[in-house]
Image (cartoon, rainbow, N blue to C red; front, side):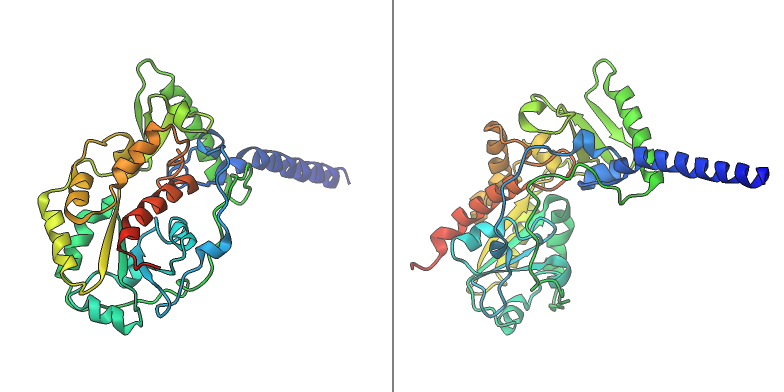
Amino acid sequence: MKSAKLFSIIVFSAVGIYGAIGLYFLPLAGFDGDLTRVAKLPEALFGWNKPQPAIPPELLLSSSWQEADVLVVGDSFSETRVWQSVLVGHGLKVRTEHWTSVRGICEDFYPWLRAQGFKGRHVIFEVIERNIEAGIPASVACRTQIYHPNINADKPHAPPVTARKDTDLSGKLSVGFDTWRSARQYDTVSTQPGFNSWNVPGGVRMARIENGCELFSHARCQDVLFYASDRLADFSKATLDNVQTLNTRLGDLTPIWVFMPDKSTVFLHHDKQFWNEAEHRFLAPNVLQIMRQALAEKTADLYPANNSHLSTTGYLKLGSAVYQTIQPTLPKR
């Protein structure tokens, strides 16, 4: 009897200790941003805290091929349809397709697109900086369009959240422990004299940003996360020459090129000239200049510290810039 009682005490004590450990570490294992997830750094330190604008769900709907005025082909910056909500709000019918479905702008892109039932005049190609150098030449080399339909292309998208969740207990205890350990390492590294950057294990770079607390709302607002693999070099003239080649395949369509700079380019390497040249040659919205102007205006969380993508605020600025580019070419109503 005593042995059974002792065993029960040991079991309940072990469960209680495990539960207490779980309650301590599990909140550290849930991530809202891709950069905090890769770096295993706590959302409590790097998650945004300033509320974001609400987007009406009806502005996030994707039109059919046959109804659309505008086709958007893009990557993860476009698949949530947030920046496109500005165009929809101005009365345009927009269809969004991902590059993983369209695969490229091949030689037969124009007849293929018309065969889908698209009757519009405008196609917006959105490309993130890190994919420009490989993606555009791959399109130039492509001969035949092969389409891979995405079953989610016609489904509604949930609006982006306006406030970040404080607690997420859906992660793994081991990840929570690793995150706690990374946070302790960050505390040690970031308090060293002259600290300005840290290559976080896992492929993330942390940088100390001048006037960071005027630009970010997270708890450690002076330090911001970036992908260590973000492109450092500018692009050569050949890149824009390839864009010109692709434009010749588009018949009577009006192409709008939206080149999204890497987050590091916006904050750390903004002397690149590619965006000025793309604007000059193709009237492409100068997204780098637009983002830099937003920072000059002290726009908070333009890119949240924990994420490599724009905030809702940033997406709405992008959408306004795209609309200003496309608006002069629209039929008079």
